[in-house]
Length: 257
Image (tube, rainbow, N blue to C red):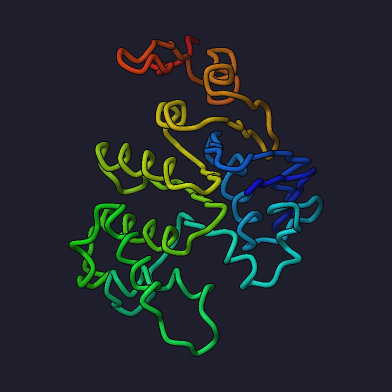
């Protein structure tokens, strides 16, 4: 499903956080948002998954205004993993947390079906967390919780998947596994990523946000230039090809004073 963001603006407490943002994620693409802290990445994602209503512009899911859909309709199209995602204040099992992802597909007060159970089991297996199914969510490590929450999003079977720093709390092996899994999972993906090298490796398209505006967009190799990184992030970057994939990787040091 295609995601379009048109001329988006957002305000909070009288402060303009996003200004005239335009973005397109074609069906099946992995689109990354990168930018310094406070640039507006999370605010943009909150608008997309309807936690924040924009002050201007539109977000289109498959051509329909996301904010005009019912909550159920939106949840059948889009799943989100915010930075502050939780599995509930009660100590649900990991399997019960993942099962929450099936609620948009169930009728009110209806029991879970065998198809729901199969979707949840498959989602836990895909993120390498099948062994956690009966563990209490609150007893899990940060990385284990993140895997379970990603499984919940996948169990929702969304057409669009929105992720805000999905590799938080994961070690480097888990980061690579999770991003590869997300890329191959099928939905259109829009993700805010902190690590520029992970973004360069896994994203089809990058949008660079600074001070609430998109300042560059395109394939990672054309966007992540030394000039842009100096201007936006305030660092000196050296690009080197990955010895196996050939994807540009970045080495950083401080800009000379």
